[in-house]
Length: 140
Image (cartoon, rainbow, N blue to C red):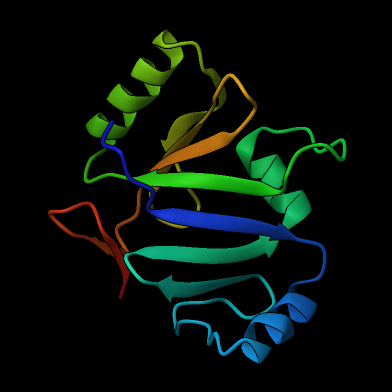
């Protein structure tokens, strides 16, 4: 697995409140956002997303008992085989698979591993985003 982060998704209690907060900081959601469901922001070479904290926990296979930080890190790759290889390598290194890799309802493919400290990492193929040769992720 290359040393990079593609997407940081922040779990939020109230998406509208969070959108207002980030707008106040000068952040504008990308047009690919789904108002009321998920917001995406181009943040340099990575993407920052805002999504329901409960939905994020459920999607990542994490139990949110209050101690979980409400964040999932993502590592985007170009193929399902690469995603599968990374998940297998993470598991071999001691990670727990929070969500086995599978086709996703948003049109891509993803799985989640949880590192030994409890941090959830999604490994994803997202056909709607551009993945640069340097690993940078761009919203279309």
